[in-house]
Image (tube, rainbow, N blue to C red):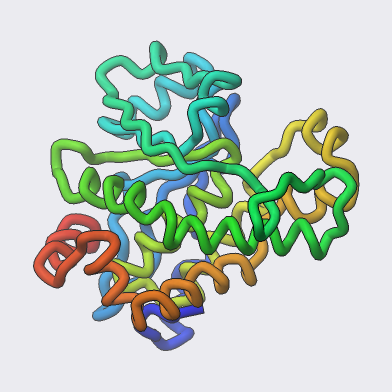
Amino acid sequence: MLPPPRMESAALDDSMDLPRSIALQGVSNARDLGGWPAAGGAHVRFGEVFRSASLGRLTDADAARLGATGLRTVVDLRGEKERQRAPSRLDALPGVAVHFLPIDPSLNGPSGEHVDIRTASGAVVLGLMRQAYVSYALTWSHCYAAMFDLLLQQARRPLLFHCTAGKDRTGFGAALLLAALGVPQEAVCADYLATNRLWQADDEIRAWLGPVASEVLLRVHGELLDAAFAAIRADCGSLDAYLERRIGLDEARRERLRAALLA
C-alpha cells in the first residue's frame, strides 16, 4: 500500500477506541471518521465526516440521531439499480441534500465476461474484488473527486457518504480521504478493517452467496486496499500526484482540506 506520512506507533495508542461507531437500528457500519492521528500531532475532527452502509432501513430514531450531528449532506455512491432496489429514506432527513455519485458495483471477469460468484472459487472472487478496487481508484476517480469538492465546501459539512454495505466503495473513499489528510497507514487500515466487526450482512444475502463467496464478499481484506494504492502509484507515481491529477487536490486545496478537517 502506498503509505501516507509515517508516525511513531505510540501515536496510534491513543486511537485504540477508534473508529467511533454510531449505533443505529436500521443502518450498520455507521461511524465518525474523526479522531485518527495525522502528521504534526493533529487529529481528524469529530463530527465532520461520517461513513455508513445504505440508508434504506433508516428508522425515525436513526434519523433523529443523524440529525443531531448537524448532518447537511449525504453522498450516495450506489448505482441506479441499487438505489431502485433499496431507496434511501430521504424523507426522514429533511433539509439534508443528497448527491448521487454512482460507482458501478459489477464484478466481471478480466475481459468483461460475467462470472457466477456463487460457484466461483474464493481465489477467483478475491481476484474480481481486486480488479474492482483498482477501478475505484482509476475508472471512478471522478466520483471521488466530486466528493472531495463537496467536502471542501463548509456549507456541505457535516457530510456522510455510503454505498450498499459501506465497505468497499465507501471503504476506499474513506482510506483516500484519511491518506490525503496525512493519517498514517496503520490508522487508515484500522478504519478500513473495522468493517469486519461493524457491518452486519443480511442472512438472506449470505445464504444466496453460499459459504465460499460469503467468506470473501462479506468481509474486507487489506490486500484489496493495497491493490488500489498500488494502482495509484503505477498510474501517477505517488499519492500526491494522484490527488492533484485525478482528485483535483493541488497543494492549496489540500491545505484547505487539512484546515477544515484537522484539529
